[in-house]
Length: 611
Ligand code: GCB
Image (cartoon, rainbow, N blue to C red; front, side):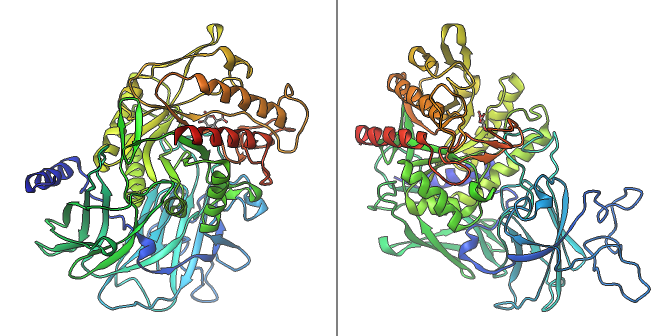
């Protein structure tokens, strides 16, 4: 039962944990009045950042005619201009630059993007925001010669309010300096096992909202194992009057509830009554309308509970086994970032064909089309921030950068029923300072979204001489489920090691194998003792999958590494890798490898056992 007292407690808890703090990200952008700025953008490649720094390497000032955010048109025939945007040099937005032109294949650095546009407001008096789905990695955004702002983080959305005085009806000159250089103090850091695709990789929109508007909201069932359909959430407003009423409607369920906002925030708590809960078998979505006196938005939201009890994961109160697959945000046949609905359909259809009920979206938040499609198709999601391998765990600034990405990931997708796990990182090396860092992220994820589980992919302690494999990373004490990556038979020994392997998992929690896999060059057929062949990869999976029959109690799922081959500059065997990590169950041409069918059979079997 939700009482008045518990509502007050929820409000206080949210305020204390900073959920309501400084978060101006607009939620549900696809449901808003938008003008797309996708399409062709002109560009200048600027490896020396000449458009940003002068010859003394001082940052250029606002009116500097040589700054690349300023007009490229000479004022008179005597004016020297050493930059310019022309149609000969265009890139498609959204999209990474690497796959669009041969000269960009390995480019990391600065590219200036420019778009001219006209703009007619749908209604006068409102606010206009410029919203980016993602830019990798740093974006400096300028409109008509003025800086709107900057953003770091390559996989999450951001927006800037556009002042009225700046926006013109015709001939707006929008410039984005995109820089994807890698740095030790950024997230991810210098070293990853994937290609650092640069560019304006996701949609760009102008979003129009009334002067007083709804910014974002969370409307989800409480984290619980029981049958009570208690909604717990919040609505964040901008420019609201004191005591503003926020109304939530779910017409199909005849729900209409109002809540009072204080300081632009309203805590939402109500019992939804009888409903069809969202699940992979029945991905039921309800139309939910959120309104205030001045604004209204709606979208389709699913309701399900997720919880952990002892060594079990419970979805809607029932034990859940995750038949997963890890996925990079990449379309292998075109060696490019995925960004569209069609891309999401391709990747998630492959996952379905494999027999999955879950995807691990590695190693960073994927585009919004993926998580929305997962909601519609009924696929559970693990969503992760790119705290990967060895970042600077001692640095407070790095922790804050990770927190920004964590908050942006959660803000965008907080209403996606498909997402059941927020992951704060992957294979971070055990040390006290790292555990403190990661634990802080787990706590912040819980504070921002108390309705979901939190985790991180850990490493295994291997005693190869005794074929003994232990998971006792102290970080596992703080996650809701213990997840670990293991490559027994690939990085450790050969696949038959799996037959006598002993596993020790030292927590009283469910555990999940967040990665396992082996490489094979698609179409390379020899025999199962020949490395890089499809037969070797198939042998690896045969041994791995039979080992799984004897895992200790608490075994709750697996997401093999991974759905499809992907570009990685660390992989330099010229014959069998050539700049690709070929651990995909699907190859660079989109063909299913032998191992695909083994995992598929395993999942069919597991499905009948776990239903
Ligand atoms: C891992 C990493 C993943 C790599 C994979 C591999 O443990 O988490 O990002 O790509 O192994 O192929 O080695």
